[in-house]
Structure formats: C-alpha cells, structure tokens
Image (cartoon, rainbow, N blue to C red; front, top):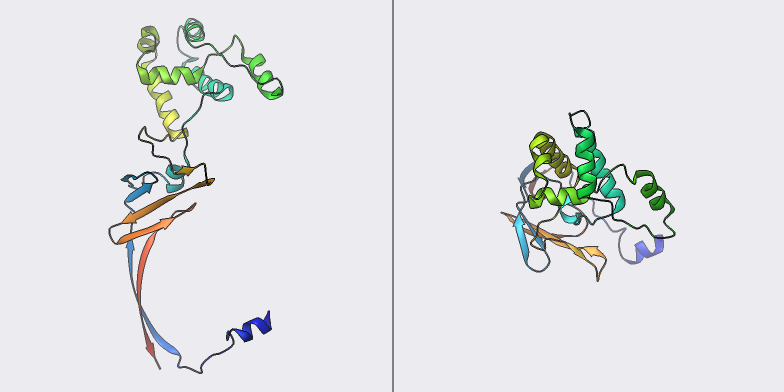
Length: 204
C-alpha cells in the first residue's frame, strides 16, 4: 500500500503557510420537490421523513394485517354498549376469508386462534374509504371510526394513486431525485440536505 501511494504521488506536499483566520458563509436550502421515475413529481414539505415517502408500498391484504386492524377497532369499541351485537355484525359483513399455505404453521395457528372471534379489519378499512360500512356501525361508533382512521394513517403511510413509487423491480433499488430552489441533485437510498458553503481563509 505504501509503495502504491508513493507511485501515485500521495506523499508529495508543500511547506505552505498556516491559516490563522477562517470565515465561512453557509446557505441551507430545504428540499421542496421529489421526483420519481416515469416523470412523476410532487411537492415535499418535510412533514414526513423522506425515507418513508420513497420506500412506502401499498398495503396488500393478508391474515396478520386483517387481524391486527380488527383488534384495534375492537379495542376502541369494546367498552361501548352493544359491543357483542356490533362484533357479530362486523364478522358477518367482513369475514376472515384467508387460507394460509400448508407450510405456513404460524398462519394456520393464527387463523385457528381467531376464527369466530374477529373480523377482517383490512376489508373494514376499505369499506370505510368506500363509505359502505353498515349504518348502525357508523351511527353508534362514529368517534371510534375516526380514531381508527387516525391510527391507520399514523401506522401506515400509503402512496397515492398516481403511480408515485420509487421502486424499480428490474434493478432492485429505489430511484429518485430531489430538488430545491438552488438546484437539483440525484440521490439513491438516502435523504439529502442541499448545502452551499463559501469559505474564505486568511493566510499568515
């Protein structure tokens, strides 16, 4: 290693002067635009971490997710009057129609433990968005439904419907660029803060 450094001149130096004063002028510019593949661009206000927006994916239905979401809504309404009747209605409206793979031991155990006790919380959330929740549930648990929606948005940051995905399956990577008022830079897999620094040095 030392001989290669010598060969490429890395040991060459100068007996130069020493800096006694240094002045630094910095300008901090915030990112305000996020650009994804296929010419998809949208404003970025910093309210969510950049990693969350870049790496988020649409939720897909699954047994574990359905049970988790149902359990949270049950927790919200369990102390309310008429809980048993409401739970039966939800189980009839949104049954757990999932069939774990034959080698998915954990999935089979989960299904066996919750069958007849809970409902499909994922389907329930979709019904809230579509406005098709039974009227009795909406009338009796309107506050709890709003709390459930808030919990969902806090825990699951979802992409929009405009194809805003930075994931490129063919390359197995996220690809995006960020821009600000002072220019543009390209980033992969990590957030950037654009900083311009001007330095003046006094020499003795």
